[in-house]
Length: 151
Image (cartoon, rainbow, N blue to C red; front, side):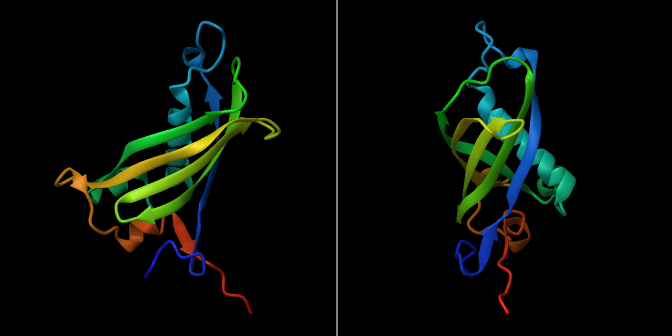
């Protein structure tokens, strides 16, 4: 089964908030660029742990991990000062061991787009340290769910 086929599955929307920490700011009071990837990863892990049937720790216990391969980030408007950010992301594609995640980072009321982009992960078997040949359905089910059947 092609887990990327739009006629059979749709991405799960990972949605959450994160607080800007004082240490995230540079000398000009802007969030340092390195923190944007952390914001996406942190909110995805929180969503997984809080709202999905498996936690990140349980995925690791089953022998899998996600390693960041590439990041493509567009900075639209700077994040300045302390406050709350809204982060949403979804899995765009799962191709073998390659998981492509698209994201947006907005202000708390979602009216300002601060950043968007794509993170690409390799799904790795912890036993071998190598990307997997095939992702088990229980794992892909955390990122893609069946489309509702129209009546």
